[in-house]
Length: 80
Image (cartoon, rainbow, N blue to C red; front, side):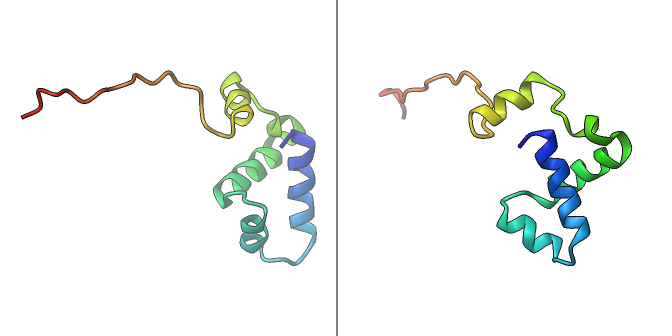
């Protein structure tokens, strides 16, 4: 979700009388994320909603799972 979409979501939820929790659940957006976006938007405007790091871009690109190399472990036959 880019900054413009976040701004639109914040403005829409603030302008209508829906239950924020229910709407966010239906959109699969955690409440903590929404309120973090809202606080940042109130403080810094649209600039506050822009992604600020490569980590954020990487995690969104791979489905919110950071690419971290994992070591393969095997079971030893010598296990007592």
